[in-house]
Image (cartoon, rainbow, N blue to C red; front, side, top):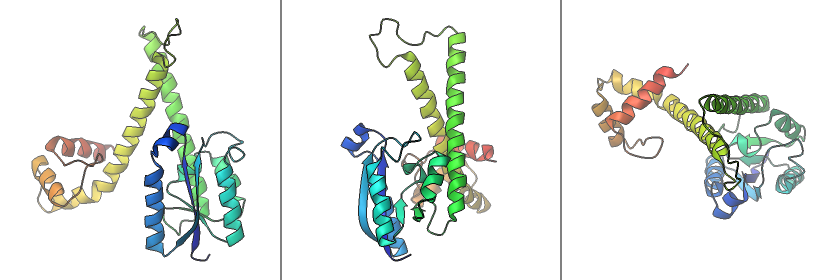
Length: 235
């Protein structure tokens, strides 16, 4: 592998593409990674397309172009996160068969390609579990007498769609909160070992050290209590 790399950036909707939502963050993550690893970005490919479906590659010409360019220059393709390629393990496997190295900036340069299959399988399973929980929540809501949908058809984004979006959003927020709690566990353990045990003291120390909350805000005693509850829920 030489020091050249191909950047691939993807968002899932045209709205995200027009607004730049997510594009700049992915580009910055890739650029920061390449700077740390001494890699030079040879070309960048940006796609606005869903990652779902067995024919996803056929619907993603920029990814196909990135694969061709990477093969031509014997360079790896770098993405900010694995889900920018796909959450489908079979699709990830098909990409691996192209014999083009893929690097996920969030995982680091030296991760075994086999592990990408594992992470993709986990992501796929999580998506399936979210869908199942959404269906269960909708079923429970119907059982309680909640009216779903709009029989008059005036609202194309009816109650059922709103509930599905709410459940999925809640799942995403919880997953992010748990990931943040896991990352901060060593910090909290050290602070407590240093004798800082109160929620107010922990919040003040975290703020002094410039460590922000998951939302990028200052710590409060309540935020400390909340994240410590999440830490206790970690396996």
